[in-house]
Image 1 (cartoon, helix red, strand yellow):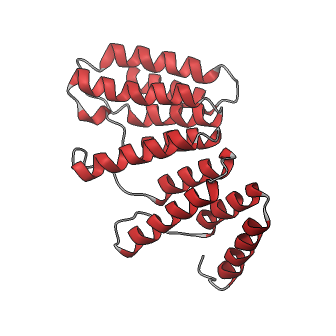
Image 2: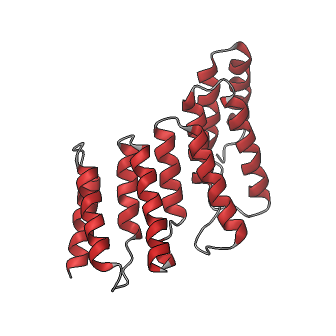
Length: 208
């Protein structure tokens, strides 16, 4: 089937390290959607996701955002909610912003995801540690003077959600390392002490 060939080509290009591969994959994806999404029902979401990841890896968050918005546009035009970005696509966009240290946009995307979940408009969305970790990574690499406060705030929200069993995934060493990274970026005595305290606490929790 030709659709499968389109998908495989997009996935192959998304994995390619050539700087132009993302754009070629996007143009092929657009062609595929134009040819098939009106008359046939196909699950293009994994292909969108592959290209989102590729744009994130290339640190091209604006193109990732445009592709994400295109998914929502297709859902509106076709009346097919299967085009709407799911949990994985939200996570991929958040991490695309994290790759360039755009913490504000990363957190805005997280809030948008949470609002959609709470409104109950989309059943395939879920609260995930990976989404929060992406926002924390964005703040940690942002260079913002208040990055530690933001990461600590997000960590607190994560812990509360974990208690209520509303969270997919577990807090682990990687999650806490986001906070350590934020402390390191600060370069202050206070931040260094906080980093040491967190590290000592992590040492006592062998299950991380």
